[in-house]
Image (cartoon, rainbow, N blue to C red):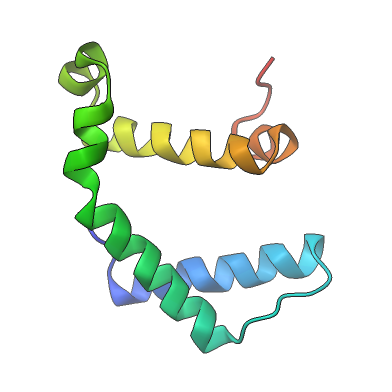
Amino acid sequence: MALTLEDRARVARGLMRYWSRFWTVIAISKAELLAAVGATDDWVEDNAASYNAALPQAARSNLSLGQKTLLLCVVAIARVSISALRQFLGEVD
């Protein structure tokens, strides 16, 4: 289910805080970041069926929508860095 406008704003604010702690330069404005959050949320919504179809049958049939979404998020975070994944999940070894 797509995020509400309020939740999109929460995500953007959270990213601004996170990035200000860990990255020195963020080269987009708050409005541009909010638009990027919205575009990302729209993309996830628009491509949910394709993602679900790409999953192995066992995952497609037995994981809930929330579990599938978390799986996507965890893999995406791991692509940033395993250190970031540890911050999110705790121990991952």
